[in-house]
Image (cartoon, rainbow, N blue to C red; front, top):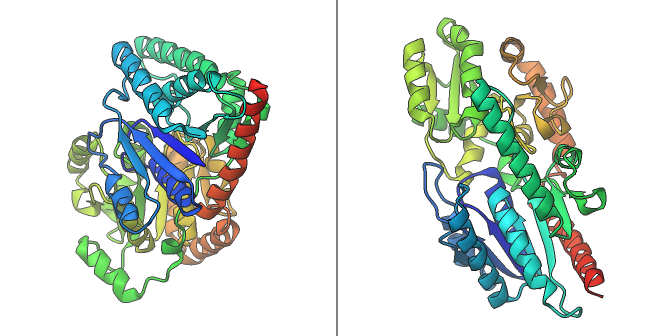
Length: 413
């Protein structure tokens, strides 16, 4: 089978990791796998090196295609050209499955694939699949002008997603919450949706970390070896909640030398956040790693004690699952699909979005007792150890693809 994945950008991020692991797993199954994406830029880095490393070790390489006009921003003329690029690519490689990811690539990719599919004979079906990695709709907040602008943008996204859903055969959600939100906006129909959890390489989170390794890693980051380390793995971006962490525990960080923040990731808000750390007088209590490759993240997580993820918009956050697989105490905002893994009092602490007081209480509660952290971390680890493997994700996508091909065949008969 020939499979073409399309993603807007191949930056370092959860949906991109999901996509590349899907490509790798499908290549191992013997499929001819192609991956198309737009220009790479910005502080989020690139995952192209990961593909190059995989290709150097396999007889079934992932073939990559750079599309010059597939950009993230809405730009009608550029988008029209990207649509042409996608159609030309689909005609050239003649895939059996077109699988799109992210909003822009998802909309343009499904439209281009649908046009090609209509021209194929019934015996040569083209299955079209789209994965919803997270909600494209923004919360209505801010000034009246900002609220109006967001409402307009959400309306445009909704209309575009409704149109694109009519041009595909299957919709994959990484969380049940995504299906519920899209159906509530009358995007697609229930029979199109399947939940497939975002797979990951779980072994590095289970591997034991010797005390000497833990000490060495902390020392390399200038973190006291006996500190209680609160880690956040996320882009330094507005909705990821770094400000909420500071609002919640800046006083605690000044008062308790045992507490230390470890922020893994980079992004457009880095300078702004560093300036805020300086103004709060806690710069030496927070370590920012900058951009790191995904294969380095497990070490940082296992060298920590508590994972905090106060993000206000998520599909189903991979970092929350990774913290649980490493046996950490986990605290997260109750955003979108997060509650499907972070069950308050059973596998972690779940906090209402934006409730800084509740976030402060949860951090203090978790930091005060090693035993309760261990109890929650162990329970979460055992509960989710099989649910998020990349192998399980790839196997479930095979079933989705078979359904999509059958739906395409029926629509042409």
